[in-house]
Image (cartoon, rainbow, N blue to C red; front, side, top):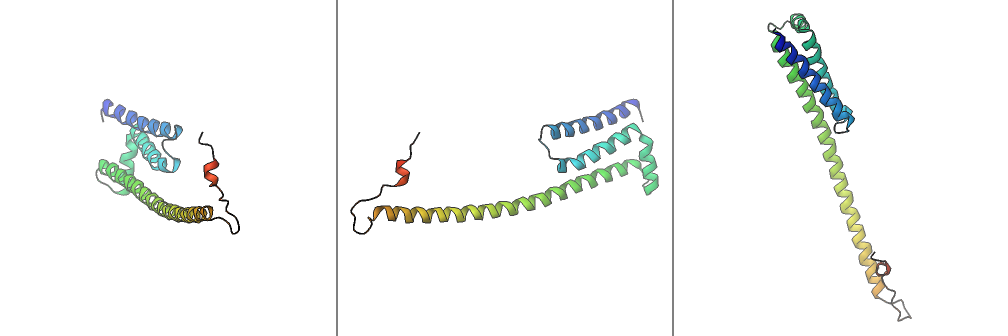
Length: 142
């Protein structure tokens, strides 16, 4: 491993961690979404600082080429991120459906109340020719 490759690995891992932490700080990324990115960045930093760790881990698991272990772990982390996002997307779709149904029911009830209220305002009470004005017409438009 050349010194340039060593520095590139360490700097890339530090940039990844810095970006994730900054996004967390600015509330552009939630903690539960940042976990896997922090894990990946930390692993990349450890392997960047101690490259022999990768060789040791590859030998321990039985992977012949240490770089294949890097690819496998990278794909595994991305797979976990996709599963997490799919689960959250499913939950959000359910919440959106429930909210849309609730809004539709509320709009229907409001329409019924407005229809009933406008019918009552037009028909005078029995024994009186006075028509009660619509309460909404009394509101100020300012």
